[in-house]
Length: 209
Length: 406
Image 1 (cartoon, rainbow over the protein chains, first blue to last red):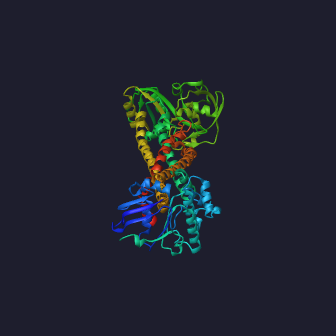
Image 2: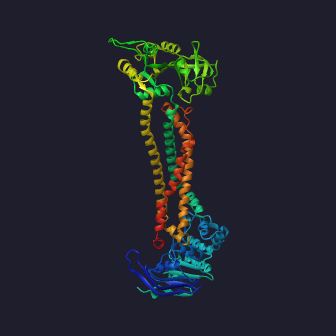
Image 3: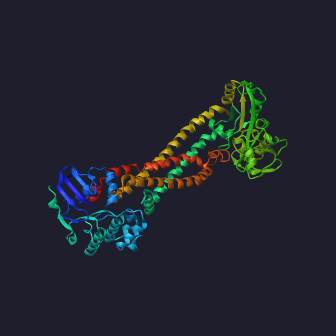
C-alpha cells in the first residue's frame, strides 16, 4: 500500500501557528521505512496525518490510491480498520480487556486472535488482563493485534522507546514479521532499531518550518 | 467485538463501580416505586370509605378525624357522646338545654348509632342497629336477635372462614384500652360485600356494646360522664337544608360536633392531594438523582478511558460503535438496577405497609399491585441511557490525535 503526501501544511490546534510544511513525501508499497528525528518535532503528527486521525490545513494525503484527507472522520476510521494496523509507544491496549480480547478488537475470529498471540509468544497469557502485562508484553499484544487484523499498512509510533534492548529487538523482529509483504512506517528516535529498514529518513530533511 | 460485548466486558471487569452504580439505581427505583405506590394508595383510600350517610356527629375533634375514624375505621379510639342525645334526635323529641332553649329535630331523615367496643384480631367490633345493616343487606343469616350475637363484614367472614353459627372471640376495646377478658359472640349473619371499610368490621347490638363498656367502666376514666350510656358517632341522613339546623344544635349546644361527609372528603382530598403531588415530585426527583449518579459514574469512567477510546478510534472503531457501547452500558446498568430495585419494591412495600398500619387503608381492602411501579421502570431505562449523553458529547468532540499524543 503506497503512501503519498503532497503540499501539506500542519498547524498547531491551539495557536494556529504552522508546525511544519511538507512538499512531497512518499513510501512505496511494501517498503519498510524508519522516520527518525528528535522528540517533539512533529514525527507523531505526521504519522497520525497518514493514519487519517486528523486532516491537514492544506494538502493531500493519499493512501493506497485513496485521497483520505478529503474524507469524513468516520470514513477514515473505517479505512483504518480495513487497511491499517497501528502500534503506539505505550497505552496501546484497553486495560480492562484480556490480551485475547484486545487482539479480538481487530478481528472477528477468536481463533485468529489466539493464533496471532501465539505467533508473538504470548499463548500462555491470552487470558491475562492487559493491565497485568509488562510493557514489553503489551507491545507484543499490540503487534499481535496488527497481525490479526491483516493490515496492508502498519504504522508504529515509538514502538520501542519504553522497552529495554532485548524487548526492543524482540518487538522489532515481530513487527517486521507482521509487515512481511506489507508497508511499514516506523517513527522513532531510538537508534537501536535502525537496522533492517529499506530506508531511514531524517524527519527534518522532509519537512520545512 | 460488538458494542454489546464491549459493554458487558466493561461492566463485568469493573465490578466495584458497576455494583455501586447498580445499587444506587436499584435504591432509586425501589424508593420511587414505593412512593408511586403510596401515591396510588392515597388516591384510592377514599374508595374504601363507608358510604350512605350525609353527616356524622362525633365528639369534638377535627372533621377529618371524625370522617376517617367512623367511615374508614382508621385512627385511635374516638371520644364519647351521650346516648341520650342520640335518643332524642332519633325520637325527634325536643332537646332541652340548661338555659331553657329547646330544639325540635324534625330535619333528620335517618340516624344510626355507632360505638366501637371490641376488637376481633385486627377487626373493629361496632355496636349499632338494623338501620346500619339493612341498607347493606345480608349474604347469609340475619341481624342479631339475641344478646351475644354478631354480624360479620364480608371480608372478615371470608378471611377467617367464619360461618353463621360459628363462635367468634374478641377482646373489649373501651376508651382506647384493650381488656384482658375474652368476649364470645355467635355469628348470626354475614353482610354482603361493600368494597368499603364495613367489610373489615363486625357488628353487634348497641346494648351488647354498652354492656361491654359497663363491664370495663374502669377504662373510661374521665372520658365519659355518662357511664356506659354512650356512643362514638351518630351517622345521619338529613332532609333538605337540615344540616344548618343540626349544626346549630350540635356544634353550639352539645359536646358533639357534626361534620358534612362530602365536605370533609373534599378537604381530605385537597390535603392529601398536596401530599400526593409532593410524593410524585419526590419520585421524579429520586429518578433524576439516580440518572445524575449514573451520568457522573459514566463521565468519570470514560474520562479515565480517554486515551483508550482514542486507541480504539485509531484502530478503526467509529464514533457510532463506541457510542453504541456507551448506550449499551447505560441500558444494562438501567436494566440491572430496575430488576433489583423492583425486587426491593416488591418485598419492601408490603413490609412498609405493615409498619404504617392504620395510617393506610387495609391491604385486603385496597390492594396495591407490584405493577403499579411499572412507570418508574419505564422512566428509568431511558433516563439511564440519557445519562450517557455527556460522555457521548465528549466522545464526539474528542481529538484523537491530541489524545494519543497525550
